Image 1: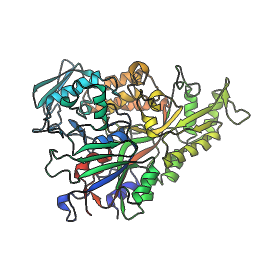
Image 2: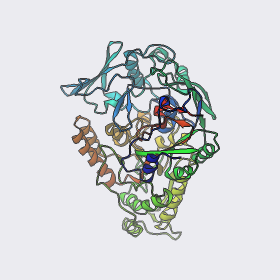
Image 3: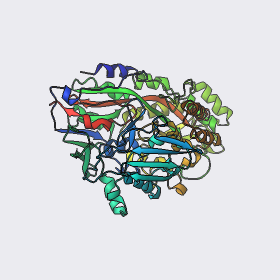
Length: 555
């Protein structure tokens, strides 16, 4: 039996749908306290919140234990977590003097780490200092704007910035335990990265590589009567197909971030419920504008005419209709929903004849083998994505055939998620730029719901991962434009949402004009649970386990 709201949202995820929820335990006569929910998940690279790059994969697990001052609510706004409230100009928590801002965070009373130690403002200050000194963090964006964190008392942290940080609610989305990590050597930090100490509803007690992570109830959790479950077990699976098979066989109880076609397949099973809400994510093909593994422009994709031709040769509407069963819409922008969405922005529609003309005019004639070439360089490219994702494999095959028809050779080289999304030091393919094209999701998400934070990490010139910055940043297209940098900086100087939105819209227009990526389709949030699991609240702006404290079993 499917939730009616979820089914309606599943038909067209771009509609404005209310969050999908199920009754709280005290409202359900069949509810029982205790039990275990087994979640199918890809193996995370790390559970350290600030060394994490595969956001969905890693955060799905660690955030059942690790919390921060604030997080993102189901409507996309900031919600207080360990903070008593979200500071704003209106409530006096944010002040601006001489162009510099300060943010006063007040902790909830009687907070404790799961080992019993008190949570204090010293943990907030320690988190900032650890971030700024740890060479393995994936980004210091925003934290590098902080001049100091003052701790006038155990419950108050005053974050003083050297200038403005309009995405201040994104900061401290995880707190590090000072009493555990201050002065810790790398071995101790590595141990923390496998079983991070936190304040959340569960505490991670076991990590078995290649198999599972166990998270057990945190008896010191601040909310009385929560969590309802005894434990969560994240069983590692190699692919979405494996997750679906185990879900149907009742070997696992849940699977998250499914594709539209996966949801349509699973909802035919009466023992499985599918929930769906719009999300700020898009499925995209990112172009690497630099030569993979070397300096200088990409010999093929450095030409904007080639990038635009590939966009014109990509049948987005047909992919949506046939592979996603019409459950979403073709992508038009990197930010599809929310107050910063670029309404009216669009990409070129499918027109292979025009694509051929662009390539010919740009000096890429057809060769005897049917592949175009220019100055001895064949128009041959390599696309990389995650292994075991059937939908992405189908999309890749469609594109292989379509691009071949205009004289472009596309080779598929998919890799495991951890290899693709790994850190700079571990040789992560995205970070190192070891691809021509990258098929993956983009858009606002778990660690960057504010457009300022997201765009700064994704599209500033200094966010290109390089050896010089130890791989910090997520500008995987290696796109650098002075006007985009200026617009990001300008948006970062005001808290006026209308002014910020105007600048973001201009940025998104530039990204489309420069054809840095093909926005294939807007992604909905599709999660699957066996019917015995209740209490789930769908949140398109966050990971599936965001309200795991409220989950419960009915059998």
